[in-house]
Structures are given as structure tokens and as C-alpha cells.
Image (cartoon, rainbow, N blue to C red; front, side, top):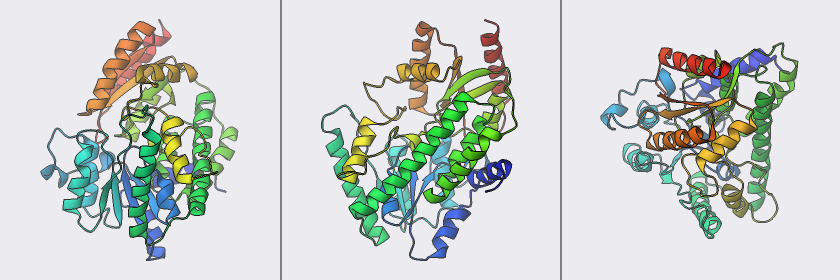
Amino acid sequence: MGCLEDLLYRSRVIAEDLQFQGPKAWKAAQPHRKVLGHFQVYFPEEIAHAAGMLPIKIVGGGNKLEARRADAHLGSFICSIMRSTLELGLSGRLSFLDMMVTHPICDAARHLAGIWTRTFPNQPAQILYLPQNPNSKAAVKYLYHEYQRLQRDIEQIAGHSISEEDLRKSIALYNENRSLLRELYNLRKESPWLLSASESFVIVKAGTILPKEEHNQLLREILSLLPERNAKPQDKVRVVFVGAFCELPPIEMIETMEEMCYVVDDDFLIGLRWLTEDVSCEGDPLWNLAAAYIEHSTWASTQYDCHKPKEKMLECQVRAARAQGAICAAAKFCEPGVDDQIAYAKHFDSAGVSYILVEFEEKQTSFERLKMQTETFAEAILFE
């Protein structure tokens, strides 16, 4: 077991690796191995894992990648994460992928699979159609059949059939990962001085490309060391950050907010924490995965669920975290994010919840305006 600072440093190195050295090494170790990439937000990685593949989440290039090639393929009004994801492919960084899966989470993302198929014909691209109406009585059955279709495609590329026992083992492994992530987030809510939001962010982001067995080990070691960390509470405002369900803010942006606030909860990489309870390993495992998505899942801008109105869910999240306010962000050119900001503002004005609205972009490098906004927000709460 390494020391905490070494583990945090390792997590950041992995999180910022745009060459994907880990997945490439994993594949090179045994040439028959296959790697599946999937775009934001949620993907049932257990299915790919059960086929012996390494599923990795493609989360854009951040502010360390200039999308020069992708700008020739996509309009300037398209969000940064779409352009940087395509840039990762066009620059050869994702040439090791054997399959790509995207989701129609917005008007821009729904075309990514078609663009990928034309641009990278050697990397089969599929679209996973998650239910548009999760409140329908047929939602679980529909998703079950969609997962069956996806499983057949994965088996064909992996060259390995998936047994129910394979799937149960993968579900158990991912249940452990989700449990450890819940523990990490609970610790942040209770003692945010022991683990900052930016540190938590890189720990979770490392799990987008690490094999789950390795990420679980990393989480266990970090969680065992955090209670002994030499850190003291500071007089900071507690806030919840929301708006990073798809495009991710730069780490420097999170660090800027943390100068004035404790970010005690967030929706960073929410797809890795989408299922809020363990998935049952009894019965049909594929049906259990489908049922969990509908019945035991969180909320996000990419899903409309009349039982989970976003503005009320966010208010509950703020109060559950004992936060004093919310930072409601929207990625530039993100229509779902901007729509939600309107709903948050209207609801919070009537509910008496303090908030600010901010805009960000993954390629952003200047944060002076955000610093001023956050500082003013924090002072308003402290002196109200």
C-alpha cells in the first residue's frame, strides 16, 4: 500500500493521460483482448466486462487537447466534448478501440455514431437507445431487449459468448465499485477537508480507463488512508455543483471554486454512479441490470423522469449534503444544461435556496471570472 499523496498523484496522472497508455498496455499484454469505448453518460459496462473486454469511458480531451482536426468535421456551435472526442479519434489516440458505443443524449450526440462509422470504418460503432420514457410500464422490458441486442454485438466483436455466470461475476465486481464510490462521496459530505472535490474528481476519473479490479483496489487503499489525513476544517461555505453530467470542467476550475467553498457533492462522471443500489445477482442478470437502470438510478439532465423532477431532486441533494447553496453550471452550447438552469433558478427563487449560474467549457484555461463569481457568492451566504 502506498502513501495517500502517492495514490492521489497516480490518480491524477491516469486521469490526465490522453495517450491511454493503460488500456493500450492492457490490450498489448494479450493480443486477443478487445477494448470497448463508450461516450457519456451511462453505459452498462458489466456486459462488456463479462465478455472479457475492457470498457473505457471516453470523456473528451479537456483543456490539454486542441481540436484542430475535429473543427473541420463539426460546426463551431457544437459543444467542446463532442469536438475533443472526435479529435481523440482523428489524432490516432483511440486507434486501439475495437468498438465504440454512443448514446442519443442530445441533438449533437445522436449523430456521433454515424460520424464515427464513416470516419473510422475499422471500429464498429453502435448506439445504445436508453428509454426516453422511464415511467412507461414497458421501460424495463424494452431496455432488457436493447441490452440483449448490445450483448450480441459485443459477443461478436469479443469472440466470446457471455454466460449468465460471467455476467453475475461482473455485476458483483461493479457493485463493489459503486459501493466504494458511495463511501468516497459520503466521506466528502461528512469531512470535506479530508478529501477535496478536485482530488475526488481525479480518483473517480481514473476509473474511466482502469480495469475495475484495479480501480477497486485504488479506492480501497485511498479510503483506508483518508481518516488519518492531517487536515483541519476551514471556515468555508458548503455548496453542491451540478451541470457536469456530460462535459467535464477542467480540474483547475474545480480547484478555483474550492478556494472559497467546500464542494461537498456534484454530478461529475455521474454515469459511473448512475445505479444507486447494488444490482441483484439472483435470477436473470441482464434483466436485473435493466430494472436497476429504471428503478434504482439517480437523476440527470439526459433523462426525463416525471418521478424525479430535476429542480426538486437538486434541492433534495443540497439539503441532504447540508449545503448552503448550489453552483448551477452549464457547458457552453449545451441545450439540456441551459434548459435546466432556467428550471433551477425558477425553483430556487421560490424555495429560498442560494445559487449562482455559471458557464464553462472543458477547454477553458482562464478562471478569473469564475473566481469572482464564486467569491461573491460565498461572501453573500456568509454575511446574509
